Length: 363
Image (cartoon, rainbow, N blue to C red; front, side, top):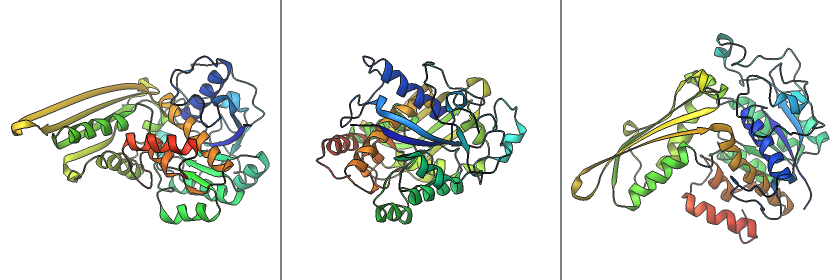
């Protein structure tokens, strides 16, 4: 089937986990644990090839990709060290709103340190690299920076996968731009394989399916990676909270009043590193109007969890490019993203993705 050439904006923990996984599944082909699809439309994980990378941290910019993905402040688990010598050095991207000012208040091994370099021409790099698509792994709150990369994709004629809670694929204006260029876009805000959002969605649907009225619920998350440090700046959280909340609300026929649902990051605990802990509480009423309470604790390595979804999003986008399908890919967006343009249940979206892979569904 050939190679899938990807570019990455943001060489952080998520990029590190994704690249480690690609090489592991490529070099240990009998190991399919953790994959939703080993062979997806003829493409396997080892077919994914990195051709360009962008970041703003001085410990990564100008460095070989193999070294940059393990540089501070990255802290995700190293589960596969045997990485190739990628013929890729990390380019200096535009900073714009990509770095929160509070990063300067923390220790250097935990925070971003902006390189004293001029940003590259992203469009030019994408064109010269031969990238099929770009994955946006920028920090939460990087609205202007994410849009800069999205525009560069339009100008370079490459697909765009938006893994962060900035509304691009779900924005009609942006979606139309990609459709007019006949370029595929997937988004917004990556949904982990088994993360807090999908667990919360599943339990919410369970309440609804079993006739239990959900009166109120919360989800509290905390961790120790740069994502949680970044989110201590509450001004950057508006889109994140909206994305996670509407993802859960979409499973209810009648959404909860805003005062009865709280979903969002809670705190930053440095020694947790890339481990994310989520607490979910749900209060409802069942038969006889009798109260029912459910509480769940989830502890998971955050970045590999999201890479398990991204590896399918990448291959579905390549199928769309092969088939010359542009615009929002609604099936895989619904399956792998918290805020797709159209919300479907997880069961429905899985079926839609299978139909798309088989060629029985256009998007």
